[in-house]
Image (cartoon, rainbow, N blue to C red):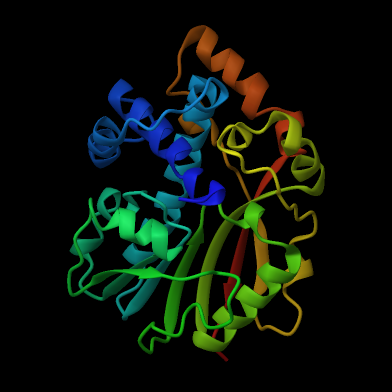
Length: 268
């Protein structure tokens, strides 16, 4: 796989390690896949602090999806864009929602790898697509409502790429609930020196400071900033680990690097 595709092994490792500890995120599928793959990650990529951070981030996305699925009885499409080898569809037990059609989307090479570990069903499919392409969602069947999650993918897209993707989503769905995590422009700038993804040769990152900047010519609206590392999840850590994590990933400096934006489109 290319450099960007290889970055998927970092969150896979983090989720597997944290799940094995029995805190924050329970993900037996990640544990199983990692045990089989054992990709050779370097020192920064194997940081326990990064593992905790990625697991908290994943939990926030999980809870976002569940909150919408639990509150909607109509047919819904869930789009997990940039899914990698993430097992969110299993963690939220999407099969319990018969009105939900779930699509995990990533580069064709990633989806080819993913199909070694996940099986499609009538309500779950995997699609190979380049999110930079305007035709990336052409294979999706018609649907009115969509829950869209973009975890750890926006930083590989320019602001113009994101704008184009949002326009594609806007044309495809009449109602959208979307959650995305981003680097700030400052975070993207310093990532070339500090980012663990550098260890798999991914060096070019992009940031987004103003959440409305990518909404031109769409009916999608910015809703709010969301917390990437909620106190309730930090509190699952103990002692020195809890104190250190707060300083490294939940303090004021971290907010200068990473943000999470929620967007919505309502039918008129």
